Length: 449
Ligand SMILES: [Zn+2]
Image 1 (cartoon, helix red, strand yellow):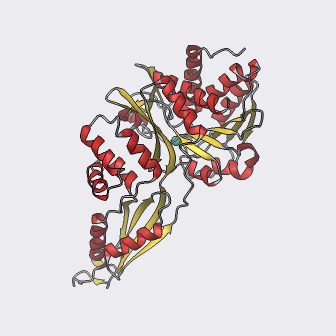
Image 2: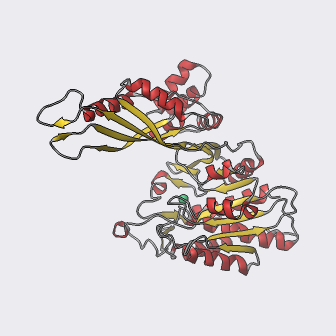
Image 3: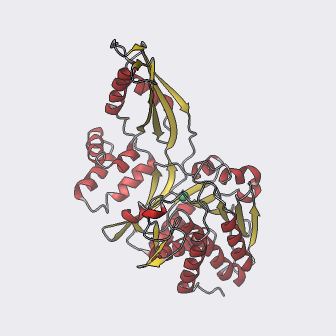
């Protein structure tokens, strides 16, 4: 007979483990994740869970722990990264590595990105071991805990390293990773957005050419001014609206619950099949940049390079564009449209770094359903939607490798708390940490039942 977890004891254990990990400084670079890895190994070993600790490079680490199922289904991965971004400590009201609890929040660098998930994933392993495996229960699939390094800079010693060096340990049907959201709007827990796909990042260089010379003699073809005209045309250019199945489902569901009437109407319009309504809906939605970015390929100018002297006209001027294509959209098509918009034979466009597309995870899969059911069991009125993230995560790598990865940050939060990610006074509400722990346990218990 299996007993249900004691959730208040599990909450205290989760908070304590999170505090221990926040106090271990893993700012990347250099990362130095080995301290957190040894901590995790110790906690997992104390409950006799099979654990491997790897050191891809000095100070860098990966932990892979496994609860064995009966093998009837392929494994599920629980992924989080141990490294964190740097801090401007004098702009914090708390010690970034002190793990102080104040007014119901745990403060510390990594509280929401991503040591909070490390703590809730860890607790899920401990509870599954104690309340299922050790009590004669059976899992239909292996549950694999992965803690990796170097997510915040490049990922050379992260998930990619594990896939390359220990594919036998991390092969899986599904993965739960960071990348989604649980959003509280005006005090109301409104929706859970589970990331099933993400935009593909590319770098494009725009170069204008012209005659060089002494600045005392102005020249009509000045490369800087030509580049300026090209950038103005890029600024006016908008990529076409493309509604993917994920976006269709996202706006259809949110249109039923969104607090603002005009935005609800726009969401309904943009997923209709009538071109005029789609255009009207998109016009209103594009006032909100984070929503507009879901509708089309995005083009952001990020850097300028030109000139060496105040009195010399350079022969070349260039700008860097960060372009994010929707999954399935071609960067070459974007380049062709930009070329037409710029319409200048002395301006070149080159893709200097080309991103790789990845398959979309299925929002009708048993994994997505397990996550949705688990969330709704805790918050019945919650809307659960599949979500296209505009930022890139490790999940794209997993999807290309054949793992259906789903992204969530399982802590219900207001936008203000979420904005502290990578910022000052990063913190997680203890109540949200509890929610995330019970949510993760519920999702994994359901999918591995
Ligand atoms: Zn992260």
